[in-house]
Length: 199
Figure 1 (cartoon, helix red, strand yellow):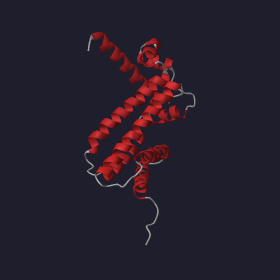
Figure 2 (tube, one colour):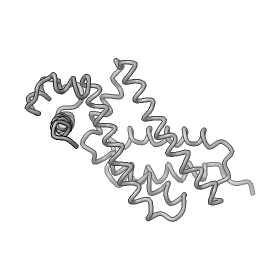
Figure 3 (cartoon, helix red, strand yellow):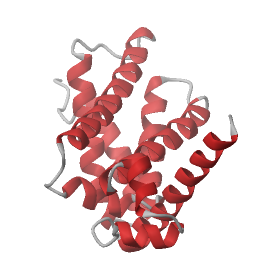
Figure 4 (tube, one colour):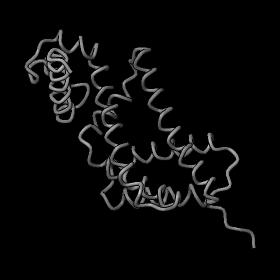
Protein backbone atom coordinates (compact mmCIF):
# COMPACT_ATOMS: atom_id res chain seq x y z
CA UNK A 1 0.00 0.00 0.00
CA UNK A 2 1.48 3.37 -1.01
CA UNK A 3 1.85 6.24 1.47
CA UNK A 4 -1.15 8.24 0.18
CA UNK A 5 -3.44 5.20 0.40
CA UNK A 6 -2.13 4.48 3.91
CA UNK A 7 -2.93 8.04 5.00
CA UNK A 8 -6.40 7.79 3.46
CA UNK A 9 -7.10 4.52 5.30
CA UNK A 10 -5.72 6.00 8.53
CA UNK A 11 -8.04 9.03 8.23
CA UNK A 12 -11.02 6.79 7.47
CA UNK A 13 -10.28 4.62 10.53
CA UNK A 14 -9.79 7.69 12.75
CA UNK A 15 -13.20 9.06 11.67
CA UNK A 16 -14.89 5.67 12.14
CA UNK A 17 -13.38 5.16 15.62
CA UNK A 18 -14.36 8.67 16.76
CA UNK A 19 -17.88 8.26 15.34
CA UNK A 20 -18.31 4.84 16.97
CA UNK A 21 -17.43 6.28 20.40
CA UNK A 22 -19.85 9.19 19.93
CA UNK A 23 -22.72 7.03 18.65
CA UNK A 24 -22.21 4.69 21.62
CA UNK A 25 -22.19 7.59 24.07
CA UNK A 26 -24.82 9.96 22.62
CA UNK A 27 -26.92 7.77 20.32
CA UNK A 28 -27.49 8.07 16.58
CA UNK A 29 -29.76 11.13 16.41
CA UNK A 30 -27.86 13.24 18.96
CA UNK A 31 -24.51 12.75 17.19
CA UNK A 32 -23.91 15.35 14.51
CA UNK A 33 -21.32 15.60 11.74
CA UNK A 34 -19.90 18.59 13.66
CA UNK A 35 -19.43 16.38 16.76
CA UNK A 36 -17.59 13.79 14.66
CA UNK A 37 -15.41 16.46 12.99
CA UNK A 38 -14.36 17.76 16.42
CA UNK A 39 -13.74 14.29 17.91
CA UNK A 40 -11.81 12.99 14.88
CA UNK A 41 -9.82 16.19 14.38
CA UNK A 42 -10.56 16.25 10.66
CA UNK A 43 -12.66 18.31 8.27
CA UNK A 44 -16.29 17.68 7.33
CA UNK A 45 -14.96 17.24 3.77
CA UNK A 46 -13.01 14.18 4.93
CA UNK A 47 -16.18 12.61 6.32
CA UNK A 48 -18.16 13.31 3.15
CA UNK A 49 -15.28 12.02 1.00
CA UNK A 50 -15.08 8.67 2.85
CA UNK A 51 -18.71 8.09 3.85
CA UNK A 52 -20.96 10.57 1.93
CA UNK A 53 -23.02 11.41 5.06
CA UNK A 54 -23.85 10.38 8.64
CA UNK A 55 -26.02 7.48 7.43
CA UNK A 56 -23.19 6.16 5.27
CA UNK A 57 -20.78 6.39 8.19
CA UNK A 58 -23.16 4.54 10.51
CA UNK A 59 -23.76 1.84 7.86
CA UNK A 60 -19.99 1.40 7.57
CA UNK A 61 -19.86 0.82 11.35
CA UNK A 62 -22.74 -1.68 11.15
CA UNK A 63 -21.02 -3.55 8.32
CA UNK A 64 -17.83 -3.58 10.41
CA UNK A 65 -19.83 -4.98 13.35
CA UNK A 66 -21.18 -7.71 11.02
CA UNK A 67 -17.63 -8.58 9.89
CA UNK A 68 -16.43 -8.80 13.52
CA UNK A 69 -19.42 -10.99 14.38
CA UNK A 70 -18.77 -13.31 11.43
CA UNK A 71 -15.08 -13.70 12.30
CA UNK A 72 -15.78 -14.39 15.99
CA UNK A 73 -18.62 -16.80 15.17
CA UNK A 74 -16.50 -18.72 12.64
CA UNK A 75 -13.90 -19.29 15.37
CA UNK A 76 -16.59 -20.38 17.88
CA UNK A 77 -18.64 -22.47 15.45
CA UNK A 78 -16.10 -25.31 15.57
CA UNK A 79 -17.07 -25.91 19.22
CA UNK A 80 -20.51 -27.14 18.11
CA UNK A 81 -20.41 -30.48 16.28
CA UNK A 82 -24.06 -30.62 15.13
CA UNK A 83 -26.22 -28.03 13.37
CA UNK A 84 -28.69 -28.15 16.27
CA UNK A 85 -25.87 -27.28 18.70
CA UNK A 86 -24.70 -24.55 16.29
CA UNK A 87 -28.18 -22.97 16.34
CA UNK A 88 -28.22 -22.90 20.15
CA UNK A 89 -24.64 -21.60 20.20
CA UNK A 90 -25.43 -18.91 17.62
CA UNK A 91 -28.51 -17.80 19.59
CA UNK A 92 -26.48 -17.48 22.79
CA UNK A 93 -23.70 -15.63 20.98
CA UNK A 94 -26.25 -13.22 19.43
CA UNK A 95 -27.85 -12.58 22.82
CA UNK A 96 -24.53 -11.74 24.47
CA UNK A 97 -23.38 -9.63 21.50
CA UNK A 98 -26.62 -7.62 21.47
CA UNK A 99 -26.42 -7.03 25.23
CA UNK A 100 -22.80 -5.89 25.21
CA UNK A 101 -22.10 -4.18 21.87
CA UNK A 102 -21.60 -0.40 22.18
CA UNK A 103 -23.67 0.34 19.04
CA UNK A 104 -26.79 -1.64 20.00
CA UNK A 105 -28.89 1.34 21.15
CA UNK A 106 -27.71 3.61 18.33
CA UNK A 107 -28.51 0.84 15.82
CA UNK A 108 -32.09 0.65 17.15
CA UNK A 109 -32.42 4.40 16.64
CA UNK A 110 -30.95 4.17 13.16
CA UNK A 111 -33.24 1.36 11.99
CA UNK A 112 -36.32 3.03 13.49
CA UNK A 113 -35.54 6.32 11.71
CA UNK A 114 -38.13 6.60 8.94
CA UNK A 115 -36.10 8.96 6.76
CA UNK A 116 -33.63 6.88 4.77
CA UNK A 117 -32.27 7.47 1.29
CA UNK A 118 -32.89 4.77 -1.36
CA UNK A 119 -29.16 3.94 -1.29
CA UNK A 120 -29.26 3.38 2.49
CA UNK A 121 -32.42 1.24 2.17
CA UNK A 122 -30.61 -0.82 -0.50
CA UNK A 123 -27.59 -1.40 1.77
CA UNK A 124 -29.85 -2.37 4.69
CA UNK A 125 -31.70 -4.84 2.43
CA UNK A 126 -28.36 -6.32 1.34
CA UNK A 127 -27.43 -6.77 5.02
CA UNK A 128 -30.73 -8.52 5.76
CA UNK A 129 -30.29 -10.74 2.68
CA UNK A 130 -26.86 -11.69 4.08
CA UNK A 131 -28.43 -12.74 7.41
CA UNK A 132 -31.04 -14.84 5.61
CA UNK A 133 -28.40 -16.46 3.38
CA UNK A 134 -26.37 -17.30 6.51
CA UNK A 135 -29.45 -18.96 8.06
CA UNK A 136 -30.15 -20.87 4.82
CA UNK A 137 -26.62 -22.28 4.74
CA UNK A 138 -26.88 -23.38 8.36
CA UNK A 139 -30.25 -25.07 7.82
CA UNK A 140 -29.04 -26.65 4.58
CA UNK A 141 -26.10 -28.13 6.51
CA UNK A 142 -28.58 -29.63 8.97
CA UNK A 143 -30.44 -31.27 6.09
CA UNK A 144 -27.19 -32.60 4.61
CA UNK A 145 -26.30 -34.08 8.03
CA UNK A 146 -29.78 -35.71 8.27
CA UNK A 147 -30.67 -33.62 11.34
CA UNK A 148 -33.61 -31.81 9.71
CA UNK A 149 -36.40 -32.66 7.32
CA UNK A 150 -37.20 -29.33 5.72
CA UNK A 151 -38.98 -28.64 2.48
CA UNK A 152 -38.84 -24.84 2.56
CA UNK A 153 -35.35 -23.74 3.64
CA UNK A 154 -35.75 -20.15 2.41
CA UNK A 155 -39.03 -19.72 4.32
CA UNK A 156 -37.56 -21.09 7.54
CA UNK A 157 -34.44 -18.93 7.12
CA UNK A 158 -36.71 -15.84 7.06
CA UNK A 159 -38.67 -17.09 10.10
CA UNK A 160 -35.41 -17.69 11.99
CA UNK A 161 -34.18 -14.20 11.14
CA UNK A 162 -37.51 -12.68 12.24
CA UNK A 163 -37.42 -14.65 15.50
CA UNK A 164 -33.89 -13.46 16.29
CA UNK A 165 -34.68 -9.87 15.29
CA UNK A 166 -37.73 -9.77 17.56
CA UNK A 167 -35.71 -11.28 20.42
CA UNK A 168 -32.99 -8.68 19.98
CA UNK A 169 -35.61 -5.97 20.63
CA UNK A 170 -37.13 -7.65 23.70
CA UNK A 171 -33.82 -8.71 25.24
CA UNK A 172 -32.75 -5.06 25.70
CA UNK A 173 -35.07 -4.90 28.72
CA UNK A 174 -33.84 -8.18 30.21
CA UNK A 175 -31.05 -9.17 32.54
CA UNK A 176 -28.28 -11.28 31.00
CA UNK A 177 -29.55 -14.68 32.25
CA UNK A 178 -33.15 -13.89 31.31
CA UNK A 179 -32.08 -12.91 27.78
CA UNK A 180 -30.02 -16.09 27.37
CA UNK A 181 -32.99 -18.17 28.57
CA UNK A 182 -35.28 -16.40 26.07
CA UNK A 183 -32.90 -17.13 23.18
CA UNK A 184 -32.58 -20.80 24.23
CA UNK A 185 -36.38 -21.10 24.46
CA UNK A 186 -36.70 -19.53 21.00
CA UNK A 187 -34.41 -22.22 19.59
CA UNK A 188 -36.43 -24.93 21.39
CA UNK A 189 -39.63 -23.62 19.80
CA UNK A 190 -38.01 -23.14 16.38
CA UNK A 191 -36.59 -26.66 16.35
CA UNK A 192 -39.37 -28.60 18.10
CA UNK A 193 -42.56 -26.50 17.91
CA UNK A 194 -45.19 -26.33 20.63
CA UNK A 195 -47.74 -28.87 19.45
CA UNK A 196 -48.08 -31.90 21.71
CA UNK A 197 -47.39 -35.11 19.72
CA UNK A 198 -50.46 -37.27 19.06
CA UNK A 199 -50.70 -40.23 21.48
